[in-house]
Image (cartoon, rainbow, N blue to C red; front, side):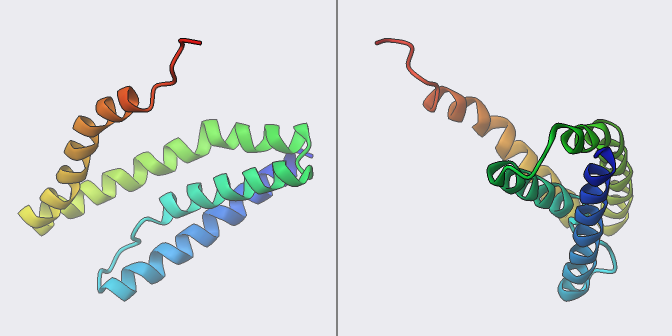
Length: 122
């Protein structure tokens, strides 16, 4: 059923938010650290595991796809806006901690795609 896909996504979101809150308090930051990211990773892992087990029917998958296309991008956009406000008010170290990984990925991904491109010659 479609509702199972929505329930699975809600479960992953709640677990991710709880984990992000605990990680933030463990690091001494009064914020959720990566809750949405943990939720998305958990959803990918659980979804893949259920597909391999053969327990994910097409209606459940459509429920997950619906919220994947609608809800998660909105939550990510909201979380990123809050993180930018916090980073700007926290100083240069927070901005550097956000900009440095983005710059590394920006320059590394083209080389990785060329290095791992499958060969078409047979």
